Image 1 (cartoon, helix red, strand yellow):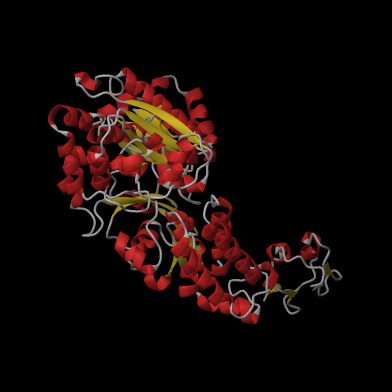
Image 2: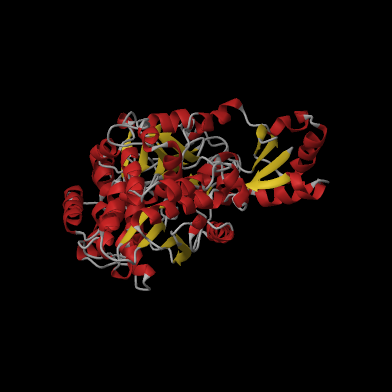
Length: 581
């Protein structure tokens, strides 16, 4: 028997560390207790899996410290009636059953701190195959057959980038992993590194061999301390086993690894800005050409891919590029990982073959909208992506199809919104982010996004003017045409898509001074319905501005000159007497 406690960041935040300690303190044979990374079911953390000879018997969810005694009894007596109340439901179990996992194949299954677990699951077999029976050109051809495209957002063919770096002149070349995951709501890369760091290392080793690099660098944001610790540990273990270093596995191939902790600038997700940061400079994009494949890190040929891209490589080598290409669509091969967050019932990591629809992910896998509210939109591609409305829920997940909607695939952030979300305010939220994260190198992005944010701020404050929508559109297209890098060029997407699909909300804010979603505080008016008010005074007691007055058992009133529109009165009222218009 084996007890595995999920110890990804999400699990630890939910209390998995305390659960682990509680179980450990009660076990006589502590060798049966281990950890795993995040299985992707973040909505059910902390998660404890019980195994018998590597076959999972039971998955326990939302586990608490006080459940430890019953878990130990269930294992020792082999009587799982002790834990019936925390067994996963069949409905929640379907969250994983409906996925196809390649990049996430080991996440939540192996101990990320033990290389032996990875090796036991076909780990490092791909690099052995590559070094003993394949030339660099054959590796690149296999990746070409697979159709693997960069999973960082651009969707550029991986083989083409590898081949360009391979053909560039120079003995000193670098392979770089972009783990600077800056999108709000995105945590795919973090989960892979925390849960299966060796799959990243092996994928990078194969890429280094293919392009002729002798040094691999992982650029990871410093806000991922657990990922960094586990990756450092994995690198050390791989070195001890002879998978990293000189003459790897007795061959002529040598390669070293190192980690660079970035300061968390969103713009460093752009590959040339990342290179500038690696060199000790402020992260700002370079003009292209030359491209990194010709003049990258220290002006040497370099290749950059993100974590998810590398996480697919070993599987492709072991199973063939043809097998990978069978999944997906004509334009987009393989699977894609999404971080499903927001107003969705089952949030977490989802990996599905390209070709599934947004509806499949949000309603079939994600279980639909929280509290059974109405779906309104999904923000796809992070702050540089776009908001897709309900009428486009059957859009196929494919680089070309998603681009046609005005959104982008991006790195895989998928933020779900219900009908309580104001789309104008949502556009403002993302513009606030991109404005603050702009590196400032080009005027269009530095000044243009700031002007757009100011207009949006004015609109949600009830000070919108006729012509604001047209001015926003003009600024959007100007920034798209003039910004230096891809991040600046895509920054207007949230505004353009919300105007395109939710123009009526902009009109309501500007012309009627009304927020249809009742979210923008400056456009709301609170009042008390006299027919429903019972005079309990609870609203008055909760009001921080002393804006509510009245006598017990008589109708209370709100002074809108004093009301700060915090909503505490509405939350406190048990009779639905407080109304918002």
